[in-house]
Image 1 (cartoon, rainbow, N blue to C red):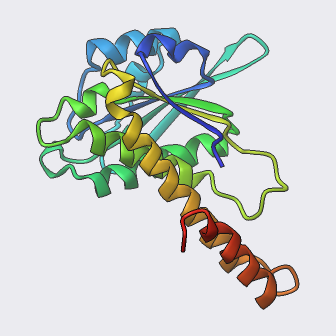
Image 2: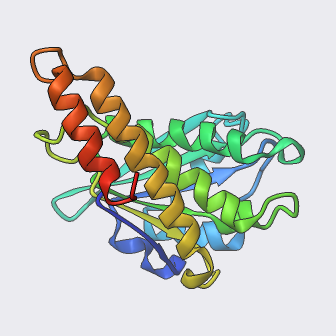
Image 3: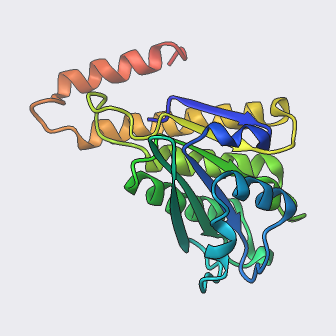
Length: 210
């Protein structure tokens, strides 16, 4: 599970290991905000955009550059047609970006949301919820004995953090419960007996008065 999910100004992106830039189909040039972040990560996104990238939903391109003793990754992810954008479509696309980064073992990622929020058909809260849910579910792994594959997700936006705080909490709660149910389903019978399932369910629901 991703332990830390936060909303920060775009300037904080430099401390992340990876940058995710979502773009709609037909985008030929990065926005000013995206281009500024791209330069901080080695100015590779503009090159990726010119490499035949069309912006189809879920289409990804990733580039890595040396930074210190490690690598910094930039991911372009296509969102499809702006006119057809919806929270569900955004979540599908975000999941593709998350899986691309997990394949490169990125420990933290910043996702630039302002270009997506700028679409009038999309609500900022829906955008934040879609990306939080998608990254959280993509990072899911059975059980808790394995180390986290991604420790931090930062939603990069000029919107005030307090405006999206409750949305991020709701999305995180949804992911936590989906992960819990997946654990129950995926655990082998010798680890999840009927008795341990019941005790686990009781413990999980007790705090909510169920």
